[in-house]
Image (cartoon, rainbow, N blue to C red; front, top):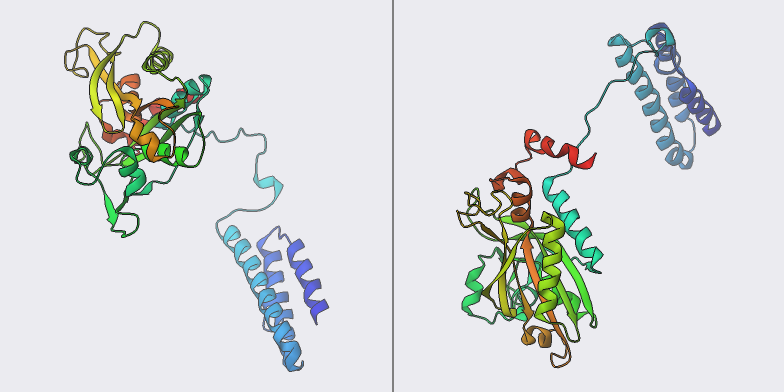
Length: 344
């Protein structure tokens, strides 16, 4: 009986009806009241109980195959689709299709990565759900420290062993993991999505994208940091873009600074984007605080390093003159199509 079924399966697989009449003949032969499947089920009643356990499944699958074959061709013939070569004009040109486009944030992220790769920076990644140590404590945010209020956090749960579990507020947590699990020198950037509990508006969102960088080695200085970022700006926005550094505060760097560039929209003359100042802040940076190095098991008397972090949305705003952050996450095809030429 098994051999019969295998033979019929081969016949069904090779069957291709050219008309509804041929399909009807197939139905009568296999699925009719006096068809092959009916005969096989009658024969199945006479086999032993041991054979039934094996043949029952095979027979049901064979019946399903025969029915699906009939149904698929029946639908095609009912819709008027004849499967003969005379039905189609094979000389007609194919239907065109639209070329997709990369998301503007993906384009800028890739460009940033390529620039830093030229300087020897690798790409490092880490989890988006983090514990308190990697997201705060190791980065010089002691408990109850006012600096923790700088970032409104999405907390997930309390953990007695590891502290609060939260969505990461920055990709600095990847820096901590990298320093904990390796030995200097480190030279890497950390692109990724981060989350902060902020009201959604044209200038802010509850999630956004960052690229942070870290360089730790012997004799690394603030001059190395400035030259690295100056090169980055010239590559991304073009030669002639002006740069300035302003003193700032971040718990994990000392000294710390914010870096501004001359507004690429008004060329420094003043506009809405730069609020009339001619300058736009694009990133924060500084020398890695010795406490952070020690927290990660690195000898701060031997090694120094710098770190920086930027929002990809802010960089993209300036590059493409996009004024509303919400456009990046609304998936409006009309908006995304504007970047189609960027991949051609």
